Image (cartoon, rainbow, N blue to C red; front, side):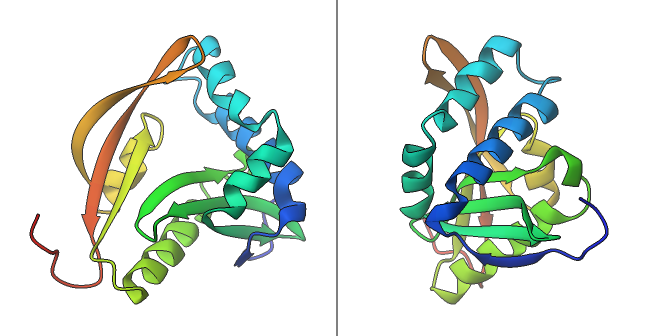
Length: 165
């Protein structure tokens, strides 16, 4: 999956199965140091119904990173300002795909008048977002089936002075 410089394009409904597989591979192969196998199974279950997963992505602003004709990552943004999902294929991890996707999402949000981005980052992705200037706000416990996953809500000012809150 390395070599070709990735490009970005909008999500297409036909991407559903490939992105569901990428989502699952990312969870199972990249989060093992932070989450138990039971937590990973519960988390990945969100993509078991590929049609519902594709519909969810289609309802968000979703950008797909493509290299060599295949998806290598995606970002899905809710309400122009909340990173709902950011996943990179394990074979493409560490190659700047997440950075490329986040840069594009933040640029789009700023161009639409947003002054702040937010994310509920997994423990695995926490350092990535902090390195990008996102500041932790609170820890969360999220139920997935009959297990709980921990994540952290972070915020980052974008596109100019952050509005008062």
